[in-house]
Length: 253
Image 1: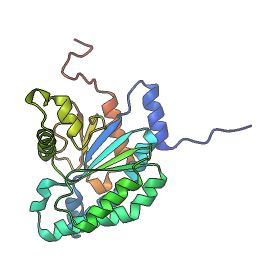
Image 2 (image 1 turned 45 degrees about the horizontal axis):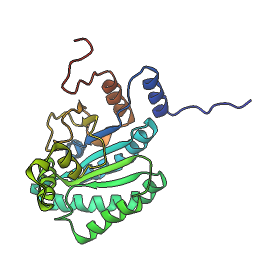
Image 3 (image 1 turned 90 degrees about the vertical axis):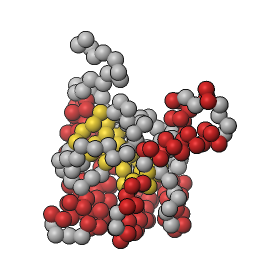
């Protein structure tokens, strides 16, 4: 007699959420915070923490895919991060390049669609080429969309969108919320349902500030390199128990 293979923890968690009538967020965005402090606690250089954080992406992507999350956005490097010491900035650029070299084929085989959010200006020609390679190689994949926000700022995103409308000679009455949203770097993606910030900090840090208008937030005290599937499921479970009102009244009202 045929038997059903045991489900993975992620599949079981998703099934439990559906059985309880709780939604799984279709777009999760993560502020991957705490890499430097994770390293400092261990007496290691900050870049070791950033590298460990990059290694952690693999298991979170896998867990999101198993849970049925359609979109995952990761905040990797902000437009303000250029003010950090040059050796750390250059190290972060190198780590991103290594991540692309190491993971693009694997993600492609998993049917993951990679997108880049942010400005390419300021990146080296070599890194620009690697970003284009990752996005073009996976452009037609139909699985999880992994958007990496690198050299990204929420305010810059809005400014760039408005500039694009002005450059297209859009009349004033044509500059609507819908028109701006269509020019943002996240165009084609739904706004994030759930934004997770690791390391216990309570700040938006200029991340998806237009798109996050009605997002739910979950602050985890765990540093990003240690943020595992069990912590992700905890955030999703809490999200599923919330009532999203979008400016209206809740059912109890």
